[in-house]
Length: 151
Image (cartoon, rainbow, N blue to C red; front, top):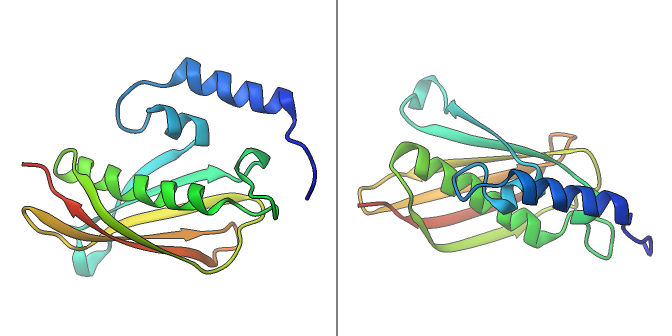
């Protein structure tokens, strides 16, 4: 704690995000600034038609709260993005109606993994969840949300 963010590192990250972003899914400014990587996966044999949006990003000094852990707002944003990109992938752009986040443990370093999925998919509303894991594979945050489906 108490360390200042390296100016060159922050400038490079901001410049890269400014230079490479587009106002489209997976490449919008915040996704580029967080350095998000996206993958879309089937949920499993028992529920093969439901998909998962998995995103990963590196934990960097730019994302730390004053206690040195990944900022809760960054966690919530990443979980919201995982759900929103899944909705867009399977049905088109939707909108978050409400979201609840439970913060379970701090993430201090390494690669962060987030998985968004449908709990109950509907025509006009869907119930979703997202789980955020630290590099150790331990669940660090859980979100549930209601989404307005496109149409």
